[in-house]
Amino acid sequence: MRLNRRGFFKVVGAAGVAVAGTGQNAGAWHSKAPKDPYGCLVDLTRCIGCRKCEEACNRVNRLPPPELPFDDPTVLDTRRRPTDKAYTVVNRYYTGKLDERSKLVPTFVKIQCMHCQDPACVSACIVGALTKKENGAVHYDVGKCIGCRYCMVACPFEIPAYEYYDPITPRVMKCTFCYERISKQGGLPGCAEICPVEALTFGKRSTLLEVARKRIKQDPARYLDHIYGEKELGGTSWMYISGEPFESVGFRPLPAEPIPRLTETIQHSLFSYLWSPALLFALLGGLMWSTHKKQNTSEKGGES
Image 1 (cartoon, rainbow, N blue to C red):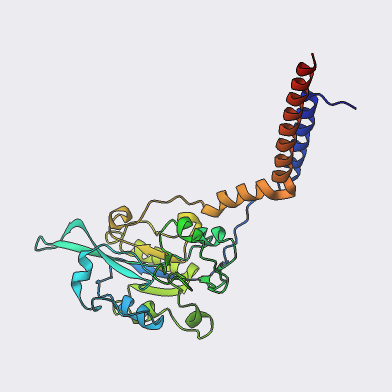
Image 2 (image 1 turned 180 degrees about the vertical axis):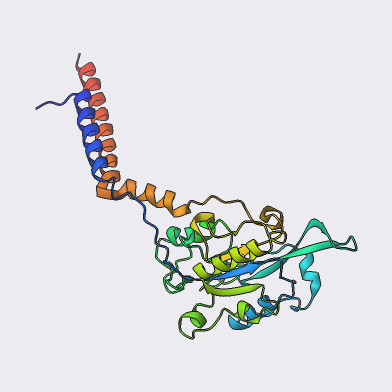
């Protein structure tokens, strides 16, 4: 049976529709977030910028000593991000708020991995070196990592850092949520344990949300009615309450939808039930058919 061009594309189109139709359920996205993991609530109205959390993190994770000591306040003059040698940092912001002496009141913000409920970094990792654990931690397995750094590109908070100075065995470095202390020793993260003003509260995420809502309700003049991390990107294990707008203290406005909802849906839709390979073969077949037709036309023209 001879198949003309129009007939060929009809067959390919019908096959594509049929295959795509059978793959609809496979493309559906399902959250992999643990039901009630541990988390940390950061109260920015309590933080005094002492940087004890940085010091504890450095000690617990056996990180190299900083260039300037932890009690040097000049560090706060520069806006910083976590690095491969510092998993958490504290920044100082002035939002224009004045005290009774008309002096600017600073707001101090601790930054670290947010340990998202549905992490973009985990979704982006092609070898499973990053996983979301039941206790809330986004855990890194250096034995699986191939150094592709897709996690660094995917993270909306720009947290993962890379050991560029190590050409042999470089690692992706970030806050571990003190995974070993929580899961095996039943302890607290080093930063939460040392905080002298209880700006950091560790516990189950559901309990922390109750604590945050209670504080906001009891003192509405002190807090904004917003728990950052409750809904942003599907929720995070680290959450914040503040008396200042989050946008003015370094936080990005983010949607409630988890990033993997979009990316994984696209991936599943393309590769479920061989839909993508089928389309590829159809396109290649069409190209071969078109090329073969042109050759035949050229040969016939040469004979005449």
